[in-house]
Image 1 (cartoon, helix red, strand yellow):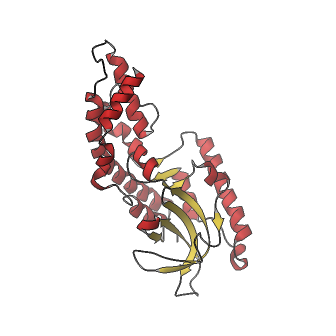
Image 2 (cartoon, rainbow, N blue to C red):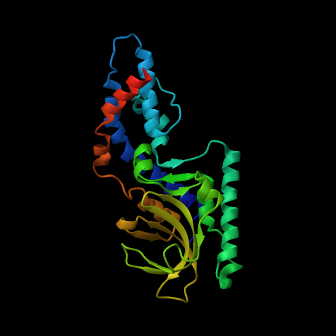
Image 3 (cartoon, rainbow, N blue to C red):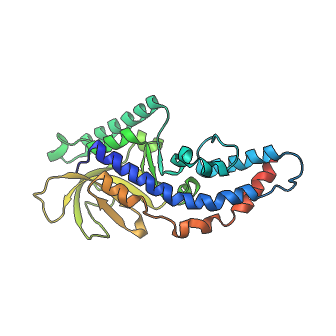
Length: 276
């Protein structure tokens, strides 16, 4: 299946907009708690020091690196400047490193496909062109939630920050659980020729699979994208935009995951105490 660069760009724009709108309410609840939590001795004259610690705490939740703000609430006040930190994607700022990492991954995948593919498709097989187009626009597409939640409970659909994935990509003819799959939502069954892993997480595996409908062996082999959430089911998508449309909310925590943040005040207090 094929999508153009414009199709993928539009799909990423919708994906990011969804993630930003889903994550902002969480920040609107967390940031006031970060700002009003006091250290053990709030009157010791180190107001600026504690404000810096509060900012550091927010940066650690977002895994954003240093933010050009004086206090956490400024992130909400200057939303357009910072919403990219919670849009569910990452782009390496060093363009040369991006190109090197991207080409290392696709070169390793292509070599593995040529080596392991069934003989009747070995000469013609190539990395799906729309995945290359995706990699030109983004380096990682993360699961739902703020970065801390996502790292604990989810992972990535696509991840060129993972050195194992980039350096030694997993390529299998049994992809990776057998020669055929069924989409647990649609009931469609697919025969697979080969595939390679493009992302993973806790209870998450994502693959590009060369496949065709199980009931039509005359159908040509085409690249599709598989997301396996194990006990929550397996989904198969025809294109990158189809995949992103579903992955935007797939595994999204109920009630914004706020039960996870119940102890946020205690955690801020400890950060202020230890950093003080």
